[in-house]
Length: 179
Image 1 (cartoon, rainbow, N blue to C red):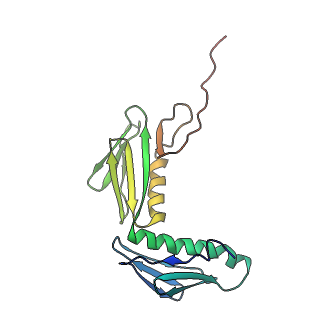
Image 2: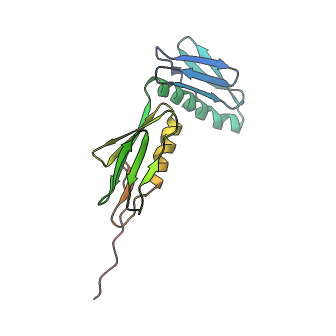
Image 3: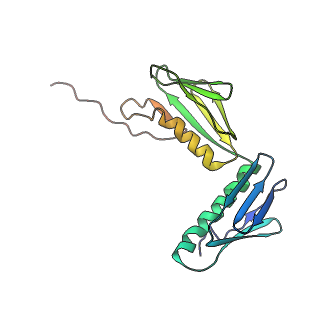
């Protein structure tokens, strides 16, 4: 039995969950999310808890059990509390600013890089070098943060670029001098 899959999901107050077969919809103060889960698992609501159960002991069912439970738990957490990812920009002259809803990055290119966030994602900048991506869909928050990081990933020699907060960048030694 999956240790993650068998844990119940508690539903906080102000959050409503609607289960229609394999379709799960969660509505809360931050927003509304819906997802169709695989047919190998079933979702049941008992009072203020949700249980994810698998149909049989096949390999596919066992694989999808913990995944489905985590997806539903992330939906419940997202509409009640929300998620955020922090990014750090390092490098001389590298900076970020918000113009309207868009994020404008100066990353050493000949032009500024503009990023338009999808619906449900908020972008904020602290101290011109820290970007905060927040929203209620964990998958979307992670994807937007990854897209921002892909504009200039950290390079191994000087460490310049966009990195996740707390990310360790492995550094390389430069070229050796003449003897």
